[in-house]
Image (cartoon, rainbow, N blue to C red; front, side, top):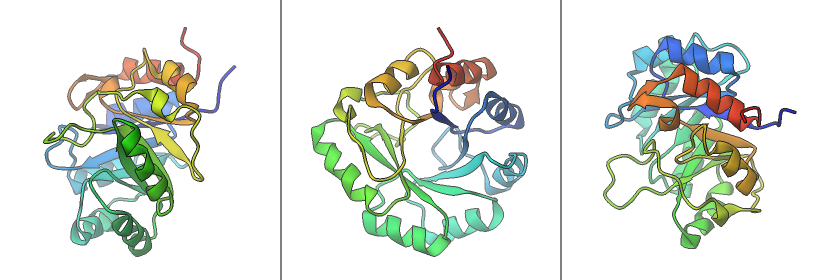
Length: 217
């Protein structure tokens, strides 16, 4: 029997991978606007891809400490359903972006240990969703998409008063275990469905979707 887990395929860069994600049943598709990422898209290309997304699939822009001017350009030119903030944005900044742009905001919060858990409660007060991700090490070039997981037992049984999504090192091989341990109803994957950095693999996308739904044995 299928479960109700919703999947976000993030870091899509071409139409073929986008179609594979949609056909496999992704609930969200993510476009990255961060120059240092191998998945970075220009605004023009993102706008083209976003127009190919069918109704009912949420289009998400991932940004990292973007200023209002950068966000203005993205929101003005790309038809979006949600902004994902993946940098060191403060709760006040999250609230300001939500108010200014009128789009739902998902805030990524890095977790490495117990000390990181209070931040989840704090951001849950100002965001529409939270993304519980593996915390990058000090000095890391990328805030996410590194294929690294955290100890899922840290959030086992925890709940927040808003939708949340599990991320960080998820793959077709481990996503069902991650869901079982955390109770996640939404999961996010990027590098876990790639054959090389920034290159999505259609078979891995399909396998991930099946595993997340409990269909892959």
